[in-house]
Figure (cartoon, rainbow, N blue to C red):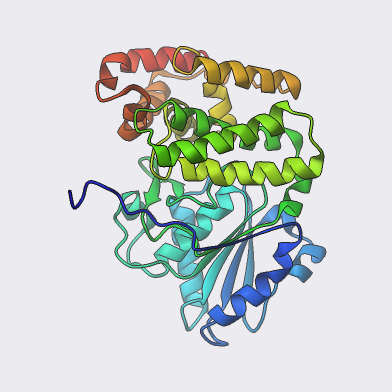
Amino acid sequence: MKTQFRNFPMVPRVIFGSGCFSQLGDILLPKRKSSEAPFIFLVDDFFENEEFVSKVPTMFNDEIIFISADEEPKTAQVDALVAQIREKYSELPSGVIGIGGGTLLDLAKAVSILLNNKGLAKEYQGWDLVGKPALYHVGVPTISGTGAEVSRTTVLLGPEKKLGINSDYTTFDQVLLDPDFTKTVPKDQWFYTGMDCFIHCVESLTGTYLNAFSQSYGEKSMELCKEVFLGDISESDSRDKLMMASWHGGMSIAYSQVGIAHAMSYGLSYQLGIKHGIGNCLVFQYLEEFYPEGVALFNQMMEKHDIQLPKGICANLTQDDFDIMIGVSLSLEPLWENALGKDWKETITPEKLQEMFQKI
């Protein structure tokens, strides 16, 4: 009984509201260890302009590092950032602040862990492998849907697999939810990332791991997703509600798990470099056999917002390509078990999975 229930962490402090980013300086001030211990801001390079830089509350030797989110975060990228920071500063930073979408939030979580733990990022891919707490770290999502702002994982592409650093030390110490940041998100990206949240809900609410904790968050997130993607609400309301849908969707899998779309999306991402949001959509459209109601809603949302998914992604792949994608996907056993139960291997064979990939 002592180990039957997981004692998961939650984000201890969160601030929400249009314009709340202006309070970041006040939040960071008491966390500063010394004038020699900088805050490191990891920021999506979309915001690399004077107007944004003037709003970042830097002092002393704080540093802003702009990073492209065109590719998924990699273990080698985390190691390079950690080495760069350690070499440049005489003291460990006071903290790490990630400003961006899931890629930047996951990088901030991973860098804060590796700055306070020995070794390489790939050594911590898995469940509960981190021995020491991360440095103080803050998340500022600038797009809504990934749930990265609230989750206890940081998903990284490693040399052998795409897998999260799942640990009690991964969760942010502070999150700022400022819907103003999401005003500039392009429509396709808004949709794909929002669907990441919607698919979190479908996979959590239909999974064998479902419990009242996950269900309560998942149902609220699903309700908000329907309002945003099928309702007629103002742009301001849409920004607020999708930000909260992302939060609740991330919480819904804290005590549960995702499922088939995520497992297959990891395979696509690892082998073909396809980003997570659109990868989920590419897979999910063909999962009617497993999620009939979810796929029907997804198709309604696609039609309402006139979204055309790319075709032929897997048309010219070699057997080696398929084998690698299948291997990465099948290695995520908790996701398959959540979707289909303990006997999932009777339903999902490598041959069945290849047929599913070939449709994409």
